[in-house]
Image (cartoon, rainbow, N blue to C red):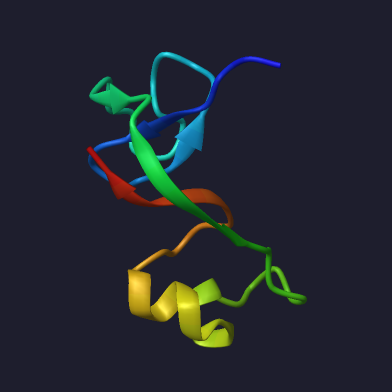
Length: 70
């Protein structure tokens, strides 16, 4: 399995060289903590409306995110 990299802009975790979430190339392999935001039950809902964690972290798309990126 490829090592995951965290985007320094949106904290999205990816194994690619470009963040698929925000299209940034500023990625780091040094991060701590992982949070997984699952998709809402209804596809028309925003994860921030159904998830307290997503709302607090400002995450609007489901996926894996790092809590702290260095």
